[in-house]
Image (tube, rainbow, N blue to C red; front, side):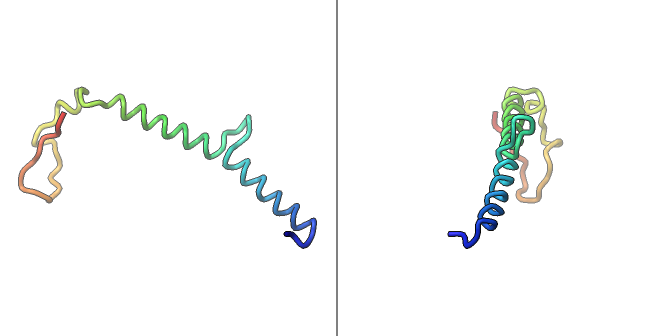
Length: 78
């Protein structure tokens, strides 16, 4: 597959660096750990802002933005 041992070692080195960057090590979390933490934080934020929250109940026709797509303002469901 490789014509020389040096080429195979260089290829292996690049693959190992890519794996360490994506997966990470014990001391340094990789891209997967960072993305997982970010998604978990977003999910917790979405769950904490459920329809029974006071912010959603306080919406009025004046506070909703006029986006220009229709003539009437539709109140959110919930």
